[in-house]
Amino acid sequence: MIIFALTAPIFFTFYSGSKTHAQQAETDQSDGLAAAKEQLEICINDMLFSAKSDEHFALFGIEIDEANDIARRLGSSQLHEVQNRLQLRYAKCLRSKDVVFQSGPLHWTIASTPGKNLTLEVAIKQTDRFQAVLDDPFFLKMIACI
Image 1 (cartoon, rainbow, N blue to C red):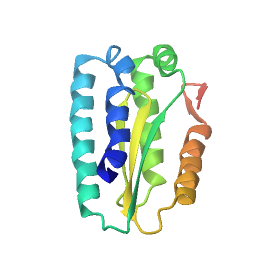
Image 2 (cartoon, rainbow, N blue to C red; image 1 turned 30 degrees about the horizontal axis):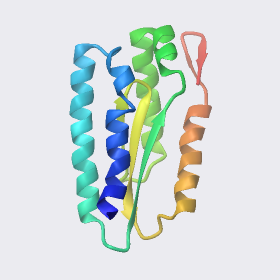
Image 3 (cartoon, helix red, strand yellow; image 1 turned 180 degrees about the horizontal axis):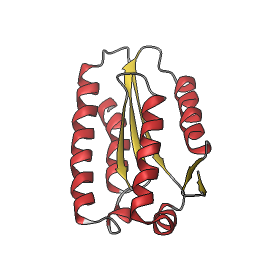
Image 4 (cartoon, one colour; image 1 turned 180 degrees about the vertical axis):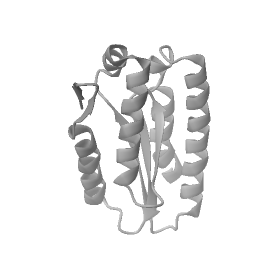
């Protein structure tokens, strides 16, 4: 039952979060996303199996609202740049063993390394940091993007 509770968000992220975006992605991008999803699943399984019984695990799914509209307005090159910058920002705000995967256009999955101190309050503080990453603007060719 515990394994189901921990893996249910993974399957939700994989199968409901990216289906609407998969139609928009190019063939190369969808192959890359499939490989990233497989790598993410392996990483999460490794984290779960290496966790001790008194450690907790958190999995976060982050998707920018109106991602399809934003992707259409930005175009492929600027979308790629925005995604790369956000990926780097997420990576910088994580601990060394936490992982962030781009699991779709303007969609990321973050797996927090299991630990004894990972409580609900800590997870909520992490979500605040993830939101701050999106709130901090950056500029692309004279266009402000969030």
